[in-house]
Image (tube, rainbow, N blue to C red; front, top):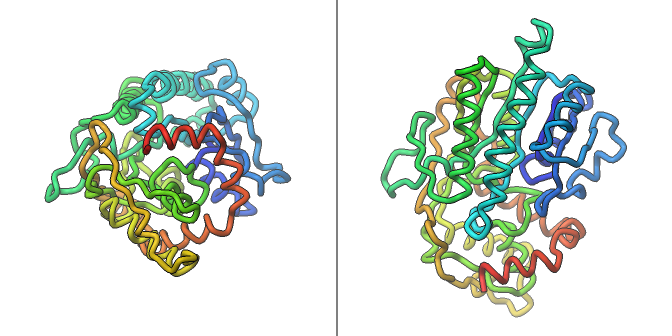
Length: 352
């Protein structure tokens, strides 16, 4: 088996579903705290799959993690568990420090103790895969080269600073203890099961519900967009063949401004679910005050993972965003289960 942390969240949940769609795949112990972004409805299709063992719990709970490792003897750990929303980190950084830094430390220590006691063969093949973000690298100028794995860390938000710290811990555990780690830093993910506080699902749902489509500042912030299914395939490639101690940047080769992303979503919705009045959804675009410390541009240079592991994304932005919009239109019950009163209060706080 493998242990997946944060496997009820957006990327973790997609990874679990993707892994177990293969009938011959190894089982997964799925450890998730089920905070606001953890959603068991994402994993409904696995209710009767004996290969999926779900455990509600915190990566900072050493006794629980040690018990799971001892009981299930996983050959690998894939660590998705993290607080990941920049706006939330600005308003409440403590949770990000606790989960992303302290939690990662506790997980590393439990895993190192478990790994140290393994037989030699199992010890050689064990892997700890740490999933991180391109935001640790800071902000790029409009014409600057994209982030490579050797780019200096320059985090600008409490979220990215906490992820940068966790990356440093993982690196240190490899160099100090010889603990077998790999790290991946991904660009902005999008796709099914995305919690609707993030830009793409927020815009899709606000559009079809007749609400404003909020865009920070002038909307010219640039991000590299990675379809979540492509991210899952890249993680599998790194877990299977990545060199120990190495970092691999995972990107979609899709740099887009936030305004361009929103306009594209509006065009797709105009086609798939036209407004009753015949107007474009773009009429609902509203520019709001920019958030503090908003990085202007991220871009991933993903040549290393292609060169060394043969991975390249299968989706373009055009194909991935169309799949994403269609998924939200086709899955209103999942959406309704997520959009609670507490969530509406959150959106009002940030975008009103």
